[in-house]
Image 1 (cartoon, rainbow, N blue to C red):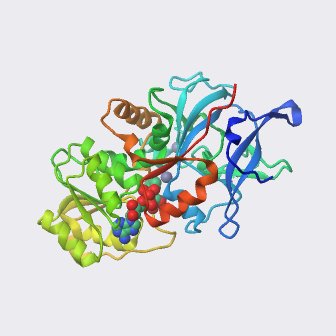
Image 2: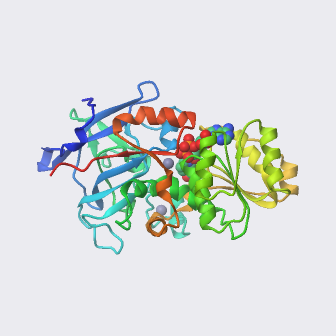
Image 3: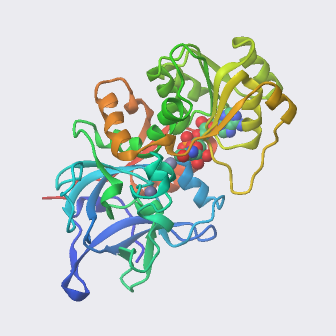
Amino acid sequence: MSVGGPGRDDVRPPTVAGPGGTDRRAVRAAVFLGPAEGLRIEELLLDPPGPGEVLVRILASGVCHSDLHVVDGDWERPVPVVLGHEGAGIVEAVGRGVGARPGDPHVGDLVVLAWTAPCGMCPACARGEGFLCLDPRGADHRRAADDVRLRRSDGTPIGAYSGIGTLATHQVVAVEAAIPVDSALPADQAALLGCAVATGVGAVTRTARVAPGESVVVIGLGGVGLSAVMGAVLAGAGLIVAVDRVAAKLERARDLGATEVVLAGDATATRATILDLLPGGADHVLEAIGLAATAELALELVRPGGTVTLVGMTPQGIRAGVDVYAFVDRAIRLLGSNYGSAIPAETFPELARHAVAGRLPVGRLVEERIRLEDLPDAFGAMRRGDGARRVVVFEPPAT
Ligand SMILES: NC(=O)c1ccc[n+]([C@@H]2O[C@H](COP(=O)([O-])OP(=O)(O)OC[C@H]3O[C@@H](n4cnc5c(N)ncnc54)[C@H](O)[C@@H]3O)[C@@H](O)[C@H]2O)c1
Ligand SMILES: [Zn+2]
Ligand SMILES: [Zn+2]
């Protein structure tokens, strides 16, 4: 059933008796049907949490370009799937076995949801690289028959993007994906920790490991790039040059601590302007858009021996060119940064502490709080580069 219209968030979702005596909960969610059919707000039925799972009432879900990549057909994903991977909420119920381990969430906790929930046991996890986990909980967008928790009333299984599908009033997720954080943090800010902030801050502090006093160029100032600017400030960087093609983004970056801003235009002019600010090149350049052209530009802006960190993600299959002679001769280091090298169980509480203490002004990333029905407009604004993060906020249920 397709539903819409404002005010529905005020209604406590009813529970529906399911097979085997389980109580399924009615939830509203943004379901992606495929590049041709697009998005639809639907009412679905959600299973109760099984062993090792938690039921989360989502309070807020940011809109990230990684959702837009799926909507625009840049990335192939199995459909139908509930979109959203940048969310926070309150734990409403826990399944068997949850609560036994230190750090497990409890009913009533504010949790940030992780789009890679490490298994803790595979070789990548053993190396301390949980973001590269080979067997993450919620893999394949919870499409396996025994993994699907959401269905239409006719029984059609619906996946959850990255296992968490946060653009929904409720979700059942693996316990490893639900990380308790300081409840003093407002929910819309907590949501942003789950992708933009973990990705952007972590790209600077954990992947590139920017040292105090080093110079940093950030190309692309969406939620991820602006978070990289915040990360550069947190790391004690010296010159922080923020680059975007939209002037309003430059103001936002200045507000977050960028020391210089550059309005991107023609590539040659942009390169010259940045190199005027940083003769010899920057210690670090981060690309946070996902374009081959700006990835190539990044390689031309770094000093010999400096580090380029690619954070933005292109449509699948896009290649960028490297001048191999110059790359080797100048001993450039080129890194890909996945999820800001986050270990969610450690990284999210730490980011929350920084935010609550005012060291990460996450609230300044929030452009607008919107309703689920406003998602198409939010995606339209994102395509134009208009505004920082838009965050879907779900009203608390009536008591
Ligand atoms: N590596 C990861 O783990 C990871 C995680 C999350 C998101 N991402 C990716 O990071 C990228 C950024 O995500 P976002 O949500 O911040 O996106 P966004 O759309 O909010 O921001 C992109 C920014 O780039 C600017 N831009 C676009 N073209 C430009 C150009 N030619 N020159 C200068 N600026 C330009 C836009 O004005 C906008 O401010 C996306 O590709 C997303 O998929 C990667
Ligand atoms: Zn994201
Ligand atoms: Zn693992």
